Length: 413
Image 1 (cartoon, rainbow, N blue to C red):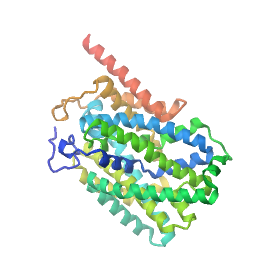
Image 2: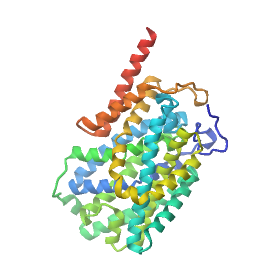
Image 3: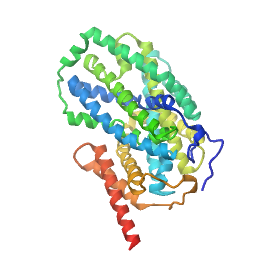
Image 4: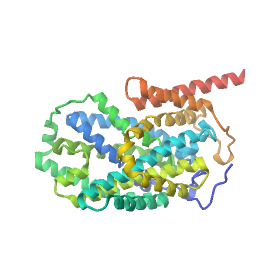
């Protein structure tokens, strides 16, 4: 059993200490930075192209309600235990069994970090003409550096990025409404290729449920459960909804789902680069931070070391990942929600919302019930009709509870 390091302010291998817990406003900004996700804007653009404005609003409200329930439950667990997703997985998957979720979550986040670096570098290169590999290297180093400093740097970055992205996004939307006839014009738009409301809700949920599985990595710093859950719910209903809204308006009026492209069309190239940079920076820092915690759980090395290693790998492979592995990363994403389902079932149902203190725990090395339930969740996401991530979470919860109850019944015979 590893002892908590008093020099590890990220608490990579231990529960967050009470004197390091954060209040409401700090956690709200951190969680808003977490949900200010570039992919949500693009997903919003897809929804905006296929839905009327009224159906779009319904879709994101319902979708974010589902996301809020899922992430809110995980936020509650993290605030009660002070543990990251990866350390929580030790209770259900076992000491060594937790390597599976940590590897899947960690490698996916490293991949998306690399893709994010390329997503920033490519349009900047087109606008400036600078060498693409130089832009990749510089942006990768900067993003890695802020993730290395941990939760304090994430907080500082979010305090700058969240209001900047919000103001610029709303300014752009206001200009779009002014140029095209106001909100009434948006509500009058009839999609050429309509999308069903059911499909739209599925896209909304799928866009962030994998990242949402990492919610405990951040909410474990909350002073109490009320702060953890409330800031998570606000972040999804406000932050994630705003990203979808920006994407939808851009898609409806400019046929562009990325706000940076919309700003270019509006003659604000410099602002486009700022928004693009801040949005991807917050997304990438959260991804790299979470991947560092995941590989720290696997290697037992401090998170800071793993952040540097992961940042170097993601930066070196950025262009290659962008060109070749986005589809593969989406496949990995389908394997993540059932991890959260197992964590939720183990804490709330099997252990009645009370875990043994992490420092005093005695846990098996491997618990096959969690792995089987996780696998059933992956199969449900792949083959069952409906909203794939929801199928994954619900199926993994049901499977885990049934298996665990059967084990308990057998052990008491």
